Length: 120
Image (cartoon, rainbow, N blue to C red; front, top):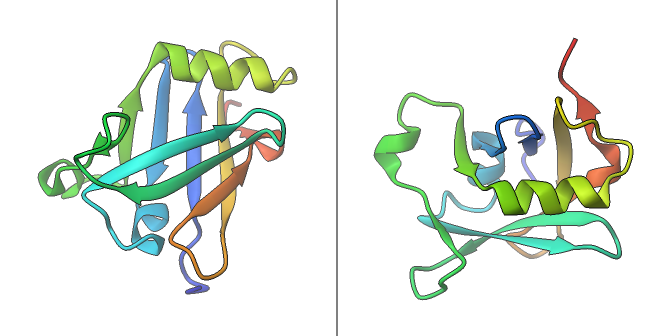
């Protein structure tokens, strides 16, 4: 894994928004589609490349990333599901989670319990 890239994801409970940072996308090969997988038992979130044939995949247009540092997904049900798994999260805050690459796979795993509030 490239040590200069630090995979991160942000979950904003107020907006409701999930922000996948560019470093995360770079580490999984800058895919055109991504899939988010939630493991409620381990309280982890994984980001991995996908394709257009998966109805749950999110399309990342290159133009939407051109001047931004992240890719944004607005989803009230998904953000609420993540909130329900992290009882220490507060409804009006945003949380940043740093992830780790799964060895020999294009997957970044985030431990939601390690989310840090980005609100002052």
